Image (cartoon, rainbow, N blue to C red; front, side):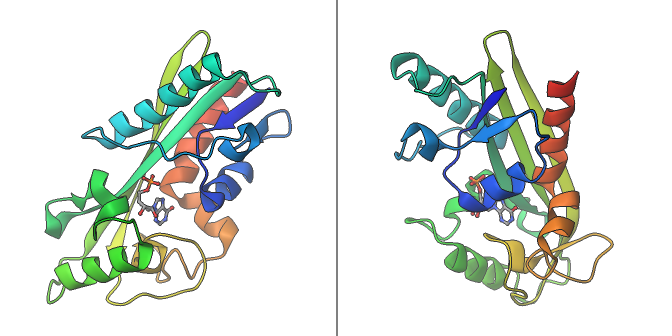
Length: 198
Ligand code: IMP
């Protein structure tokens, strides 16, 4: 089947691709020449995932792609830090304002957490999936803690600050396969793959 991931984020696409079985061909928004940014206007992570998946599903009705698309899914993620009342959450991408910037977001987070010893946090991904018969949502959560300084060169976003539970390394210090096998996105994608394999 041809499955369109409604994302232009190369890091996310690489992570999802690595978890896809051979019978699923994964496409990204660049494969349908879609280059716009979809405004994430919902108040929740679930809402933004749904909004992005529905937007692209409806877009394809008006702009059929040369490649036949069987289904579409979108993901939305957020970092939730308990000491910050679970912020930045749904606002993770633009925590330090517009335009969105990973480095500025990490810097702001460290400033907000200065002198804070309570460092526990979680990463959450919601996947919204649509095909002609159904709408489904899949959630992935990984618990962990916020580091005191950025560590590691791999990954993206908040990876240099997030230490998954049971590890000493940040996501950015772990190798690609390890992060992908335990991450919020990995958990949600595995649920999607299981659903598609039923
Ligand atoms: P979104 O799902 O693209 O809206 O992501 C929200 C924010 O979380 C952005 O700042 C991303 O860079 C960040 N983010 C999403 N997934 C990950 C991840 O796996 N690791 C680190 N940061 C992430």
